[in-house]
Each structure stands twice: as C-alpha cells, then as structure tokens.
Length: 185
Image 1: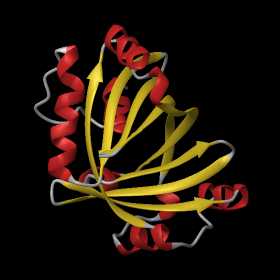
Image 2: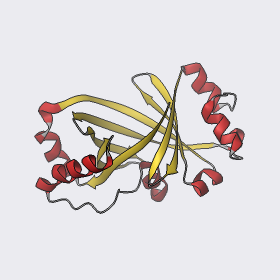
Image 3: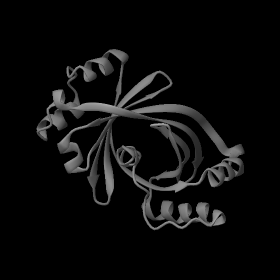
Image 4: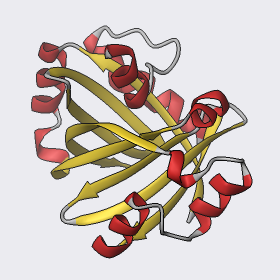
C-alpha cells in the first residue's frame, strides 16, 4: 500500500508530554508499544529514504519512505514472521525490495544496526490521528507529538490549535526518529 504521509511533529519536554497526555486521557483510542528496526545503506541516506520493520502486537510491517513534494511517499507491506526473517536474510522479494534493487541498493548490503522503541498513545480527531510518543533508544528518551492528517491545510490549522495552549512554537517538523537516533551515535 502506498500513501502520501502528511504529518506535523514537534519534540516535547517530559512535563509537556505528561500534561498533553493528561489533557487528552479520555480521548486516547489506543496505547501500545512498537519497535522500529531501522536499516541503513549509503544510498538510502543519500536519497533521504527511510527503511524499517515495525513490530507491533506481534505483527510486522516493512516500510519505505521517500521524499515527494515536501512530504513522504510511504510504502507499507505487512509481513509474516517468516517473511520478516527472509528479509533479514536478504531473501524476500516484494514491491519494496524491487524499488530498492531498481535504485541500486543491494539487499545484502543493508545494515540493521539499531532500533527505537515507542510507547504510543493515539487520539483520533476529525482531521487525523494525533500521537503522543515516548521514544527510547541507546538509553535515551525523547517525547514527540505527531499529527498525521489527510488534508494539509486543515491539519496544519488544527495542529496549531492543539499546541497553542502549551505555548509551543512550530516552524517546521522536528527531525525524524531515525535522524535523531543517527545523531545520537
């Protein structure tokens, strides 16, 4: 499945994270742990692509994100445990592996060197999904508010309304999770 990912996100302090979590407590639809295993390759970094396998509720999803018109083109494929293992052994063939090979990225050169664990709280709003993320990587924690929307303008307006009571300033998205992990190395 492919979709254009339109999201607004900002890093939070632990106190602001806790305050927003408390304020939206009654609206939390889901709360769960997800683990992102990130894959690196010089061409992925050069092209500003992101490749990961996400584990959530004993299910696996392979995701490739590529830049497109100030957003990201996201390709997601659900995997079985056997398919996940085949991918890690460079033996899986699917739409994403074909894109990588077409881009000159050899599957056997992909490196999985780190992961990030997120405790995510999802709140469904008419404009999109608001997620509060507590992220852990390399014995570090950070806190993030992410708003994934369908309509860029309406979503942006609602995002500004959400963060205003917390005196947060938004000018652009905070660095991605993978960038923060790489920067911490």
